[in-house]
Image (cartoon, rainbow, N blue to C red):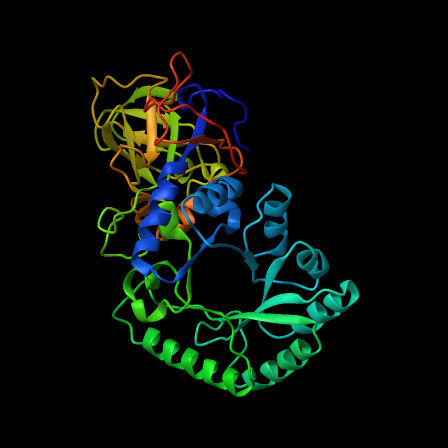
Length: 406
């Protein structure tokens, strides 16, 4: 769900909202592009732009100079085409139900790991139009991609289809497993195997224009992995892929602020149990605030002592997260927190990063931002555009444009 119209409700008037700053996305794309120049930049907008809205993310990335967009599924790429996006798009994860014909008709490049090359060529033949493909080699991640043992055979088949005019091999790519841990030697091994795969491709007279390997962590830490293009995702949305470097360290800006308001405040005695399972009991009289978001909204059920910001002050969650709500211990009896006060779960000026929620839930910040559910409206703002006189503005004085898909 996204807020549409010229002047949608301000976040403070909504029960909950994920406020997405398009200017932050543009800033991050420009920052990453400066790291990797002269390599091209592909921005991954899969999974609804990592939860930020696919169209919003795509438009902001392209405005900032991104050269390509990437999606996991052809269906995601087709939605962007239907929304008017004309930039090059690569989709790389397919099933027997993937509509290769529509992808070819809509000028969507297709990642090929093996079996897909035959139905893609068949679709191209029926359309009398060559499919643009990028061959993927598995250099150690063990997911998609052709094994190095089967690589020569895939190259032989691909070269044959290319000679017949059914495909055009635009790229060769792979994906890194541990680039977010720069000291791991496996990345060196993957890059060595990738270079070998390129040499084997050259023996089959396949020398594509686009060699691409680097994800966000490799784009930021491994210049030897940049090649002709990098594929970046989480960094575009202002999240650090490294455990020991913050978003600020990398010069990036978080693009999502998750907000709601206090739904209830009450005093409780010592020994009061909190939420299902009574996994937490307060050890002294205290005041509790009820936060009206739960795992149906994407708040991790397993999060323990996760931070929130209420009226500029940090508090911690207590007890088990429920489907629609969780509880915060205000740690005092004479609190000034009242029903309706603003709650920032992460982002904005709260000082709370998605990575802190990730730590509380035993996961990573990628999952935290991507899992925010459809019940949470995405409100799109642009902090680089000053408000017009007399118009509704967001909490920072920026008009809410309400663009995007979510």
